[in-house]
Figure (tube, rainbow, N blue to C red):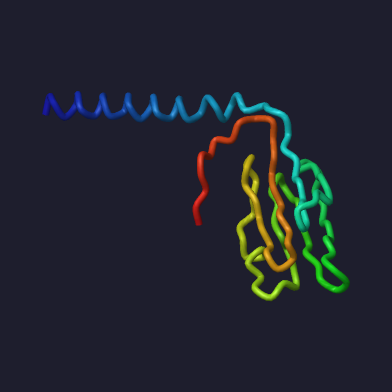
Length: 124
């Protein structure tokens, strides 16, 4: 019984330390706000703030389009007329270095910030 108490105290201390280590970067994260950079066919066609909620229509050729939704610091493609629709089904992005790509419309949507990304790789 004596060892169980000591083990529980040790486990509680480890969990508390891990929580504090996780919490400190969250509280100190006051870096520059990120921007959304939109590229089409390899050329930058726009830069938008993640702080301003808006919907942006991005035309492709004559009749095709993507609707970019910026809301609550997140970016997503809310509608598009591309054949596969993968860009619409992609989750909203919000971190530095994340991107949404629509191959049929040759569109790349990236989030960029001056702060260093906490991600070293993203897999799907």
